[in-house]
Image 1 (cartoon, rainbow, N blue to C red):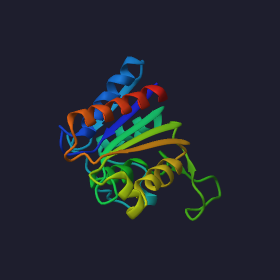
Image 2: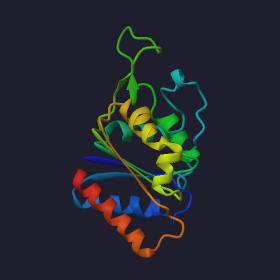
Image 3: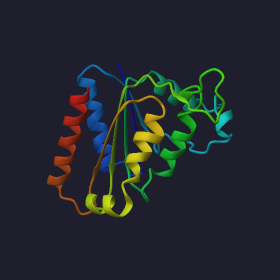
Image 4: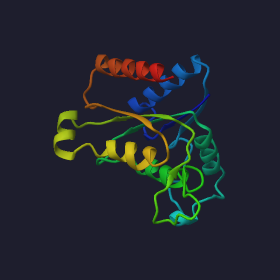
Length: 195
Protein backbone atom coordinates (compact mmCIF):
# COMPACT_ATOMS: atom_id res chain seq x y z
CA UNK A 1 0.00 0.00 0.00
CA UNK A 2 1.34 3.41 -0.98
CA UNK A 3 0.47 6.59 0.89
CA UNK A 4 1.29 9.94 -0.68
CA UNK A 5 1.82 12.68 1.91
CA UNK A 6 2.09 16.30 0.80
CA UNK A 7 2.89 19.18 3.13
CA UNK A 8 2.75 22.76 1.87
CA UNK A 9 3.88 25.16 4.56
CA UNK A 10 7.09 27.21 4.28
CA UNK A 11 7.76 26.90 8.02
CA UNK A 12 9.36 23.51 8.81
CA UNK A 13 8.36 23.97 12.46
CA UNK A 14 4.69 24.47 11.59
CA UNK A 15 1.78 22.44 12.89
CA UNK A 16 1.23 21.32 9.28
CA UNK A 17 4.67 19.68 9.31
CA UNK A 18 4.12 18.13 12.73
CA UNK A 19 0.82 16.60 11.57
CA UNK A 20 2.34 15.33 8.31
CA UNK A 21 5.27 13.72 10.12
CA UNK A 22 2.91 12.12 12.64
CA UNK A 23 0.81 10.74 9.76
CA UNK A 24 3.98 9.37 8.17
CA UNK A 25 4.96 7.52 11.36
CA UNK A 26 1.40 6.27 11.91
CA UNK A 27 1.18 4.80 8.40
CA UNK A 28 4.71 3.37 8.40
CA UNK A 29 3.91 1.35 11.52
CA UNK A 30 0.93 -0.09 9.65
CA UNK A 31 3.11 -1.23 6.75
CA UNK A 32 2.49 1.53 4.24
CA UNK A 33 5.16 2.59 1.80
CA UNK A 34 5.35 6.38 2.10
CA UNK A 35 5.96 9.00 -0.57
CA UNK A 36 6.55 12.08 1.61
CA UNK A 37 6.94 15.50 -0.01
CA UNK A 38 7.58 18.86 1.60
CA UNK A 39 6.87 21.03 -1.44
CA UNK A 40 8.75 24.07 -0.14
CA UNK A 41 11.82 22.14 0.99
CA UNK A 42 12.15 20.30 -2.30
CA UNK A 43 11.71 23.51 -4.33
CA UNK A 44 8.66 22.32 -6.25
CA UNK A 45 8.07 24.67 -9.20
CA UNK A 46 4.34 25.55 -9.11
CA UNK A 47 4.25 27.29 -12.49
CA UNK A 48 2.44 25.25 -15.15
CA UNK A 49 4.03 26.29 -18.47
CA UNK A 50 1.29 24.99 -20.79
CA UNK A 51 -2.47 25.11 -21.02
CA UNK A 52 -4.59 22.44 -19.36
CA UNK A 53 -5.09 20.23 -22.43
CA UNK A 54 -1.35 20.18 -23.20
CA UNK A 55 -0.42 19.25 -19.63
CA UNK A 56 0.14 15.54 -20.17
CA UNK A 57 3.91 15.28 -19.63
CA UNK A 58 6.68 17.42 -18.17
CA UNK A 59 10.42 17.82 -18.64
CA UNK A 60 10.57 18.44 -14.87
CA UNK A 61 11.65 15.14 -13.26
CA UNK A 62 10.11 16.12 -9.92
CA UNK A 63 6.72 16.71 -11.53
CA UNK A 64 6.95 13.30 -13.20
CA UNK A 65 7.83 11.66 -9.88
CA UNK A 66 4.83 13.29 -8.19
CA UNK A 67 2.53 12.21 -11.04
CA UNK A 68 3.73 8.60 -10.88
CA UNK A 69 3.28 8.48 -7.10
CA UNK A 70 -0.16 10.12 -7.26
CA UNK A 71 -1.32 7.57 -9.84
CA UNK A 72 -0.14 4.66 -7.67
CA UNK A 73 -1.24 5.99 -4.27
CA UNK A 74 -3.81 4.06 -2.30
CA UNK A 75 -4.19 6.91 0.20
CA UNK A 76 -3.45 10.62 -0.26
CA UNK A 77 -2.85 13.02 2.65
CA UNK A 78 -2.41 16.78 2.31
CA UNK A 79 -1.44 19.22 5.08
CA UNK A 80 -1.49 22.98 4.55
CA UNK A 81 -2.45 26.34 6.03
CA UNK A 82 -5.57 28.19 4.95
CA UNK A 83 -4.42 31.36 3.20
CA UNK A 84 -7.24 33.62 1.98
CA UNK A 85 -9.64 30.67 1.90
CA UNK A 86 -7.31 28.77 -0.42
CA UNK A 87 -4.27 26.50 -0.35
CA UNK A 88 -0.89 28.27 -0.58
CA UNK A 89 0.23 29.05 -4.15
CA UNK A 90 2.82 26.25 -4.18
CA UNK A 91 0.08 23.72 -3.43
CA UNK A 92 -2.26 25.17 -6.04
CA UNK A 93 0.59 24.89 -8.55
CA UNK A 94 1.17 21.29 -7.46
CA UNK A 95 -2.49 20.54 -8.23
CA UNK A 96 -2.22 22.31 -11.60
CA UNK A 97 0.88 20.34 -12.61
CA UNK A 98 0.28 16.93 -11.03
CA UNK A 99 -3.50 16.40 -11.25
CA UNK A 100 -3.15 16.41 -14.98
CA UNK A 101 -4.97 14.96 -17.96
CA UNK A 102 -4.15 11.28 -18.32
CA UNK A 103 -2.87 11.01 -14.74
CA UNK A 104 -5.71 12.19 -12.50
CA UNK A 105 -8.59 12.46 -14.96
CA UNK A 106 -9.48 11.75 -18.56
CA UNK A 107 -12.32 11.78 -21.05
CA UNK A 108 -14.13 8.72 -22.37
CA UNK A 109 -13.75 8.01 -26.10
CA UNK A 110 -15.81 10.45 -28.12
CA UNK A 111 -16.15 12.96 -25.28
CA UNK A 112 -14.60 16.38 -25.88
CA UNK A 113 -13.05 18.70 -23.31
CA UNK A 114 -16.47 20.29 -22.81
CA UNK A 115 -17.81 16.93 -21.61
CA UNK A 116 -17.72 15.35 -18.21
CA UNK A 117 -14.31 13.93 -17.27
CA UNK A 118 -13.77 10.66 -15.44
CA UNK A 119 -11.48 10.23 -12.47
CA UNK A 120 -8.42 8.06 -12.95
CA UNK A 121 -6.91 8.03 -9.48
CA UNK A 122 -6.51 4.68 -7.77
CA UNK A 123 -6.84 6.11 -4.25
CA UNK A 124 -10.27 5.73 -2.74
CA UNK A 125 -9.51 7.86 0.32
CA UNK A 126 -7.92 11.26 0.89
CA UNK A 127 -7.34 13.22 4.07
CA UNK A 128 -6.81 16.98 3.97
CA UNK A 129 -5.96 18.85 7.17
CA UNK A 130 -5.52 22.56 7.06
CA UNK A 131 -4.56 24.99 9.78
CA UNK A 132 -6.18 28.36 10.18
CA UNK A 133 -6.08 31.44 12.34
CA UNK A 134 -9.80 32.07 11.81
CA UNK A 135 -12.14 30.44 14.33
CA UNK A 136 -14.05 27.61 12.58
CA UNK A 137 -17.45 29.18 13.36
CA UNK A 138 -16.46 32.46 11.68
CA UNK A 139 -14.91 30.62 8.74
CA UNK A 140 -18.18 28.81 8.08
CA UNK A 141 -20.47 31.78 8.73
CA UNK A 142 -18.54 34.44 6.80
CA UNK A 143 -16.68 32.52 4.11
CA UNK A 144 -18.69 29.31 3.71
CA UNK A 145 -15.58 27.09 4.05
CA UNK A 146 -14.35 27.26 0.42
CA UNK A 147 -11.63 24.66 1.09
CA UNK A 148 -14.31 22.02 1.60
CA UNK A 149 -15.59 22.50 -1.95
CA UNK A 150 -12.12 22.81 -3.47
CA UNK A 151 -10.81 19.55 -2.04
CA UNK A 152 -13.96 17.40 -2.00
CA UNK A 153 -15.50 18.37 -5.32
CA UNK A 154 -13.09 20.30 -7.53
CA UNK A 155 -9.98 18.19 -6.92
CA UNK A 156 -10.47 14.74 -5.42
CA UNK A 157 -14.10 14.15 -6.34
CA UNK A 158 -13.48 14.99 -9.99
CA UNK A 159 -10.45 12.68 -10.05
CA UNK A 160 -12.26 9.62 -8.70
CA UNK A 161 -11.49 9.72 -4.98
CA UNK A 162 -14.83 8.98 -3.36
CA UNK A 163 -13.94 9.43 0.31
CA UNK A 164 -12.45 12.80 1.23
CA UNK A 165 -12.08 13.71 4.88
CA UNK A 166 -11.12 17.32 5.55
CA UNK A 167 -10.42 18.87 8.89
CA UNK A 168 -9.57 22.42 9.81
CA UNK A 169 -7.72 23.07 13.04
CA UNK A 170 -7.35 26.46 14.63
CA UNK A 171 -6.99 29.17 15.48
CA UNK A 172 -3.34 28.11 15.54
CA UNK A 173 -1.80 31.46 16.46
CA UNK A 174 -1.77 31.75 20.20
CA UNK A 175 -2.76 28.11 20.69
CA UNK A 176 -1.32 26.32 23.70
CA UNK A 177 0.95 23.30 23.69
CA UNK A 178 -1.96 21.33 25.12
CA UNK A 179 -4.28 22.38 22.29
CA UNK A 180 -1.67 21.45 19.65
CA UNK A 181 -1.17 18.08 21.32
CA UNK A 182 -4.92 17.52 21.16
CA UNK A 183 -5.01 18.36 17.44
CA UNK A 184 -2.08 16.03 16.80
CA UNK A 185 -3.84 13.23 18.69
CA UNK A 186 -6.99 13.79 16.61
CA UNK A 187 -4.99 13.58 13.37
CA UNK A 188 -3.22 10.43 14.55
CA UNK A 189 -6.56 8.79 15.35
CA UNK A 190 -8.05 9.84 12.00
CA UNK A 191 -5.09 8.49 10.02
CA UNK A 192 -4.95 5.25 12.04
CA UNK A 193 -8.69 4.61 11.54
CA UNK A 194 -8.54 5.23 7.81
CA UNK A 195 -5.39 3.12 7.39
